[in-house]
Image 1 (cartoon, rainbow, N blue to C red):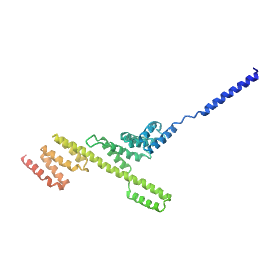
Image 2: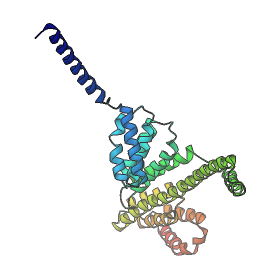
Image 3: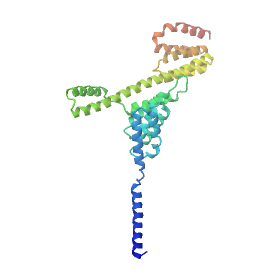
Image 4: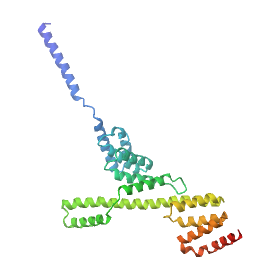
Length: 298
């Protein structure tokens, strides 16, 4: 084989190898970045959530919790995951995610909604009145914090604005300024609605706590442990005067004093009771007579 032919063949082989290497490199796509994977996973979860596939949305978002830290999507991932848990009735996990969002991204635009939903998650976890009331207490605390942080100062003006721009849009539905102001007033009105809900929820949850203490007092009465019963009646009187159990707790307190033969204390309690509930005067006639008779004996 001549030197010229050998050189030609070597050159062709080198060209072929180079072509294969170039072809292989050009077909290999660069690995997606962590941010791209978070964006892709979040977009996928959003679609699932929109379709009410909350469990799968949560499963898609869970692996993104670490990779989304300190990114623009951190609070988005936490908020959507928390709502996915809430909508699938996983309220304990939901409360954890809402709390985590408030701790990790306190200035998030989702903060207001997260605080409200945190309270609502604990409300959902609040059990029957006879059971441990840890979540009931927590729900009251979180609702109270929500009302304190996001109080509405001029609700009448907001309602007026909402009605005004609603009517203006009927006249000129294409006016961009009307649309913007109507949307703003609607958002403000939703805040009023959530504040009203929080206030109502706190009242209902306090009724449950009062009922819990009142039921314990009655159980101690049945067991003839009157001193212990008095402690729980006093708890209702001291902590829940705004509930329907306030008056029955006072009546129960008087009864256990009589059972313990604390006649002087019972007499004072009756006087205080009638100052609070003057319409109960007739019901106290027999009790007051019994107390007076026993005081005279002693």
